[in-house]
Length: 195
Image (cartoon, rainbow, N blue to C red; front, side, top):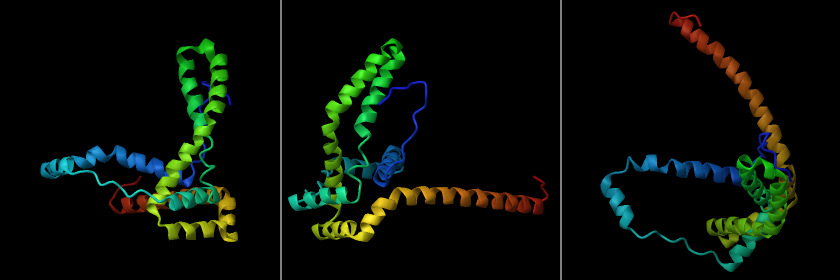
């Protein structure tokens, strides 16, 4: 682990669930703007209504959800969260105390190792989400799929498939943009404009 404030951090590819979580966070951030369109009566009614508490998943659902997260690879996709948070926190102190960079690196390394066991908390958050969203039978079916040869192949190939897919979509997008440039010019020419 290195604290390097001079070089920009290279973003790691977010796993599918992390990407979904980021999308959800962006949605929630925009919620106040959406709420402004709601009628005052509805806002007052929503404020006084008790929040519906989702049913707690059973112990079997939690067990199956944990097994599923291991089988589908998502349990290990958050391995870097704790070291990254510790490193970023320590790097924040480097900006105001540049002479302490060496000591801050050592502290970050020590704390990363010390708090590594808390990674299970992240897995439990995910397991609770899965266990709440899927029935026991659905979890069994998903687990059966990810333990099958096709499921194992999907987990093994997922990163490669996403990389090839992203690259192919970028190439397609560039070609499509060139086509649109020609079409926009043609349409604007029909209106008497040369661009």
